[in-house]
Length: 364
Ligand code: PMV
Image 1 (cartoon, rainbow, N blue to C red):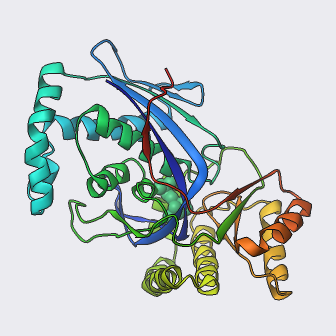
Image 2 (cartoon, helix red, strand yellow; image 1 turned 135 degrees about the vertical axis):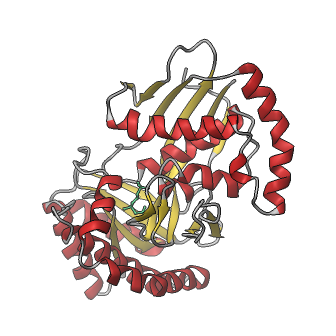
């Protein structure tokens, strides 16, 4: 069965940087994000006995065995998917009643599909409308779309909670793109990761004035992937304990700020949190420096504009792009100023957006 899903990237306001379990993709800390309305990835998957191997095509380029994308991301996620299907989602066997019931309900569907039809190989074609691997959270949209499409193609019947757990195992931040609006990924405590999933804080219509201006200072693919970078940080940054000690306070403030639509509280806390994450990166050995001169230029400008009465804040992920947080009323003025800033290649304006959806028009 061929299934296509579209999902949007999310941008973290309280970041995830570091895992407690690398294989299961379990984070050291909880995180909060906003799902965007326009950084989209569309993915078509087809499991079929006709395929003699797994095929991965991202933005018109085929990735083969031996590439990082294929081996570390695609194939390892696929193996998890296959195991899930083959073992009748035993992952959920000991979970709560709701999950248990859906396990029992889905067991027969999956059995019929996987054991009899044995859809061993898959073709995945994915198209994004923004640069991948450049610090725009493309993996969050990519794996949310992949998980949503595979869920339907394999007849898993997962609802949001289970889908978030599934997407998390492709890329941590993808657990949050399963929902629209503002979302929190709870780190969980369990070793098996069944309590590590995202939940919505408020939906995409709750705060219609919230805006994010994404300023691209380079469209090049970054040299250090988040996965590699964060593992190195946990191992070597002397500040990692300090990061963990302050996270709960950041989460509390951002959660409260979102619910009260308190822009100053959300913006200030998000900016501080982002700077703490970059301090971790800088103190990693060897250092991880994602910023370029355009990034620094804009960081100074945002602080200057704010000091002069135009309220805005910045956040930056694992890449050089600066995301300016502002309210709708200040958007035209900030846009005008951002466009004049040196080193900006492109600008995308976004607001809280939707979760994944299944669509009919396939990519192949
Ligand atoms: O999900 P990953 O492995 O792409 O890591 C995401 C890391 C950050 O974007 C820097 C932070 C976050 O919480 O999204």
